[in-house]
Every structure is written in structure tokens, then in C-alpha cells.
Amino acid sequence: MALGFTPAVNIYGANAALLNQRLISWEHIDAAGFESDQLTLTIDLEGLEGLPGLGGKIGLQVGYRETAMVDKGQFKVTRLTPTLFPFRLTVVATAAPFSKDDETGFKQRRTASHGPTTLGGLFRKLVELHGFSPRVAPEISLIRIEHIDQSNETDMGFVTRLAKKYNVVAKPYGDVYVLARPGQTKSLSGQILPDVTLSVTHNNRPGDHAFISATLEESAREQAKGCKTCFWDAAAGVLRWVETGVAPFKTLRQKQPSEADAIAVGEGEVRKMLRQRYKVKITCPGDPRLAAEGLLLLDESWPDFMRGRWSIDKVTASGSRENSYRCLIDASCLDPKAEQ
Image 1 (cartoon, helix red, strand yellow):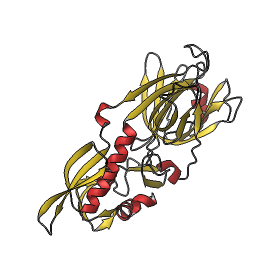
Image 2 (cartoon, rainbow, N blue to C red):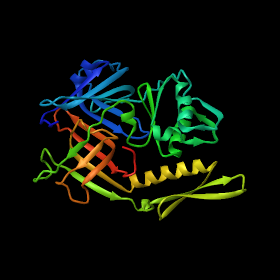
Image 3 (tube, rainbow, N blue to C red):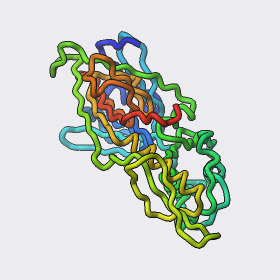
Image 4 (tube, one colour):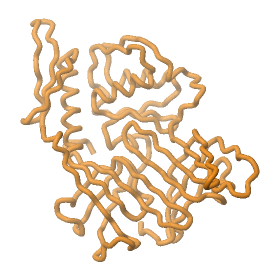
């Protein structure tokens, strides 16, 4: 899809006419992993009597007048912040589906023991209790869990801790709750993410419409290529260690309940280290195709040490009626061992 030159944005849903008429600026944060997507609108209050009631759900469409606009989904208004000077209102909306009433008790603390079970089975059991439709990546669904305790935790917090233990992601998308490896959750939720190719122009200078800036970071903490995990062998009465990947190894000293758990945790940690070793931060012209968990291709116009495929961790898109539409991309080295 070719990009246009005239940025366009449209708010739909509750109070759409007022929001579109008085919109000063907007920011959309599309994040991978556990962070909820967020939409922030700045609204002009000059000439209005009283504070407008702006609750309910709103949606965002963004793009260019010369090309088709892209729907970025719906968000629930969670916070209104008025300011006197300048006389404006900041509207914050989140894609998280939870209501403040929490009718099913998803955010109520409880204590329980689970196992023996599987990661997929336990996840399905927990989220179905609260009305979600679970989606679990097949390659992680059958990971064995001998025993795990939920100690004075909410079901929401326990699901998050469970996902972090195995270096996977648990994230809601409307009524669907997805458990998958990083980079897979949106595809499992039914969203189609196109690969986006980004090119640097020959005259890449600040002030130019197509100006791109980028910073590459290499994490000194992620030089390890393998992981050592341990488990208690009850039959032999000894602590045993399991190696995953290749040397040099990172050692995780938290004891796992079984060999299968130790292997699963180690494999997840290796994937995480590979993804986090190299990161790139790019500021570029707005592109509505960019989305967290999508793939970004830096072509031959880039320096050779930046070329290739990157997994998008976060996209912060922003703009206004008068100024340009820009995107800030945070992306990680694409894990060559990840399931695509």
C-alpha cells in the first residue's frame, strides 16, 4: 500500500462528532506483550459550557486522504483530565476489556493449587471462568505443569505470572484471551498483520516529509546463548541441572518442580535472550500498517548492520490536524528459532 501525503484521522463511536470537531492532537500506543493498547486524545474546550460527558467506547481510524484508512480498533474511555490553560481536555482510553465493576471477580485475590495439568489446560480453565474465549498456541499448549500454587493472587495476576514464567504472552483482545509466544498473539486473535518494508530516502534530512532516524542498541546483558535450570529429583534425592541452548550459559537458580518444567523454562529463556540481544528504535513517517507483533523489513537502503527482519514490540503513532503523522517504532532482533 502506497502512503499518501495528507494525514487523516477519524474517531468513531461515543461522542464521535464532538471529538472529531474539537480534536487537537492524538496518540495511539500499540504494544506487544502484557501492556494494554492505549489511545490519548487532546480536545479543545474553548467555547463549551461545562465539561462534556465522554464515556463509553471510541474507535480510531488513521491513514492518509490519498489512500485508504486503517481501523486501529476500539477503546474504552478510562480517564478524563481537564486543564485550565490551555483550556483543553485529555481523554485516555484503553483496549483492555475489564470493567471497573469486575462482575466475574477476575481481579479478586484468591488462593488455590493447580496440577498436574498443562499450560494450555490451566490457562483455558482460568479465563473461561470469566467469560473469555481462550486461544492457545499449539506448541505451548501441552507444556506439562506438575504443580503450581496461586497464593493470594488475582486470576488476572496469576495468568500473567504463569505466562512470564514460561516466557510467553497472555493478552486479551476484546472477548478473546490469547496465550502465545511473543509475536504470535495478534495472529491467533484473528488479526492479519502485513509485513512492512521501510526504506531510507537518498536525501534523508530533518524537516523532510520522509525523514527517518534510527538507533541500534546491543544489550551487554544478553550475551549468553544458553540457559541452565534446575529441578529436584525426588527419586534420587538430588538437585539436577538441565542445559538448554549453547554456551555461554545464563543460570536460573529458581528450582522447578520437574525436569519437564526446567526444560520448558530454559527454552523460553533462550528465546527471550535471542530476541532481546539487539533492539532498534526508529522514528519515521506515519504508516497505518505498522502494528505491534508485526514484522518490519529494513531493505538495502539501510546500513548493512541494520538490514533484515525485525519483530515490532511497540508502535507509538501520533499526529494532529495541522502537523505531520509520525510513528516511533521499538523492535527486537527477530528470533531465528521462533515459530513463525
